[in-house]
Amino acid sequence: MEFTAPVTERDYVRAYWLNCKSGFRTFASILIYLATAFFWTIVIASWIYAKIHPVSNSGQYAQVVASILLPFAVLLSLWILIFRVLVPFVVRGRYRREGLAGVNVSFNVHEEGLHIQPSKFAAEMTSWSHFRYWRESPELIVVGINLKKYCILPKGTLDIEQQNTLRAVLIAV
Image (cartoon, rainbow, N blue to C red):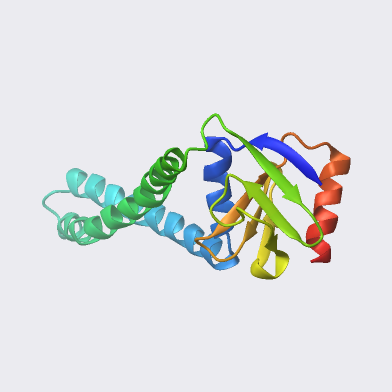
């Protein structure tokens, strides 16, 4: 099966997240979000309580709790900032450096292998044995060698029958 489609910046970023997706990362992300919300809630509640009751022992205790938990809340917030803002920024820069903007990419999918032009990892017919896994989202399919090396197959220009054909090839291999 052969088709031509553009790989947009949005596809490129979504492919990165799809390629990195795992149960452990999802679980860790949920824990970090919950911990961040918990720490900030405690810090803000402690500050408010300390402002309302400045001379009581409990107010002083709340001030100490807020000052101890604040660095953890800030670090967790920075962690979220790095992975939700900085990483997509870096991935977008990688997309621009690879020269995919405004270029139609030619995909050649056969039972023997995959050929994508232009591509770093499948520039010539590459056997399916070189790829370890594939993942699918509603917008695209990622065929991966490892977490850093993967090929993006956008589904935007494919009709349902072509998508089913592509899935059948990937499932078979």
